[in-house]
Image 1: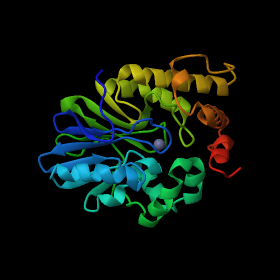
Image 2: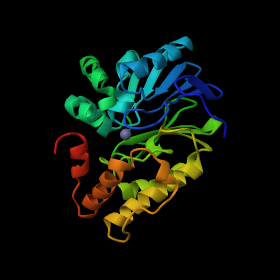
Image 3: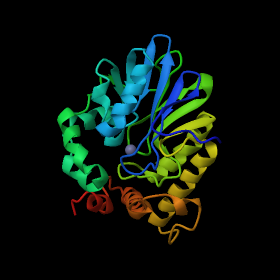
Image 4: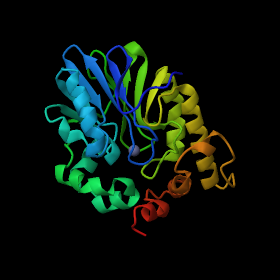
Length: 281
Ligand SMILES: [Zn+2]
């Protein structure tokens, strides 16, 4: 697979663009653009101004109206630039809508993502846009854009399929080459969902990391299954594997395993390992 340049609007297929950010660690996500006859659908908006401003300017240079903004989920590294698309309808799951209507936990963001410490006050001041249109079922949004609700990374994930060019924007249901984070998800469900995700399109744009496909989705599934097996006491540790090079294994292994263990015991709670990472414990 050819290397796709980062921090630029790269045309992946006819009228379908990706804006990738290198690294893919906490706060460093990807976004997308799909062009229909009536205008543009944007998928996610990155996090802080230094990230979303160049993306927004590149979208403006396409010189088409931005009609729709799809938020794959409510995590701040996907919704931080939403105010920049002031005239677009905003589509998201009911869970995304509820989280965006709540207060922004700025102190937790600063503790969890210290690299962006000095930009979070700006983000808090601007705020995010509320969801204007709820996505509760699979829906053909435009002639090119299909919305597919799912869960696993969160309880309200939305994927965007552009079937005519065989491209899926998976949001954070896919992390490629980066350790996934399931603090609000369900690692067991997530791993199961990935069978279907990997078959939806030839080309998969993950929420974090480089563009991939079924093979990368399979690796993510294997990693999550190890986390679930450890939580159940069936395995002792994550064995050596391709994930050895993934950034942020610490603290994410501990968070993912603890979350799987909590859910296995019927406790839908924030893992202590995540609370510690956010400076709460
Ligand atoms: Zn996320």
